[in-house]
Image (cartoon, rainbow, N blue to C red):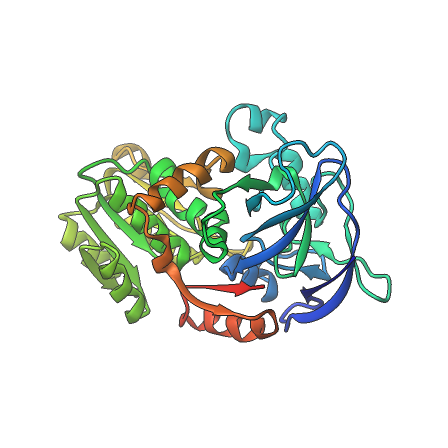
Length: 366
């Protein structure tokens, strides 16, 4: 079939909205009519070269849509189902999946690195015969997508697509980091560095988990204002004085600190803002050449924990429904993260706003 999508052909961009041919779904795959796809820093990091991916590539990894065709053996869904697409197609049978760590699925990670679907190969084709790579098994910046059914999770039919899309990355990554990776419990003092869609989702989850104090840190003032609206008890301007201010507000450091920035220097700050016995969680994706320097003695002498969190340590088919239920109960007001809707042809302007810090979470509506 014919479709249109935003393809990155060279590092630095811009994305080009092109006509493409899309093969029908293969074994265990779905054809999705994409209705909404979020703009995320993980997409931006491919555009600017911070995350090296094979090109050309049709970007977009946080999407929601409707099943319009099922491939042979795709038995989990039927035509008409509304689904959220997540960026790790978990096979369900590798050693990571069977231990409950589907975010680390080994075949899924290999497919994502190679720019293929979980079942292998690419389903997209440009008029000149070139086959663009898939982005994280989704390639949601398009009118249609073929995906592995392992990338999809069923959501209620009355959940708006532009809200549903946010559950595929921002909510799974941010809320999961708070609930699972950091393990926020009632009474915890929590700090979130970076107030994009992921950071604000972490803030919402920390509030839902009963944190007694939530400190929001960002260089952008209007994001700190939004964080206050969403439940932050304090806010701190990002910069060299942030650690000292956080430690003063918390009496020596926070119990749980979540870094969502993908900036190595900020991760160092997040660790220094964590109290003895506390946990520092990072969900950002720094450039692979970046390193950090930390006081090694503190890991033992202060029983500190530093850990990474990918996909919020979530299992999408377990956690998307849980988080949707929290949203519908008013405990995770995810709609507050949505800062703009745009057409596919305006996607480069959207990425400019994202890079400048102007936007929180924009969604391409198709």
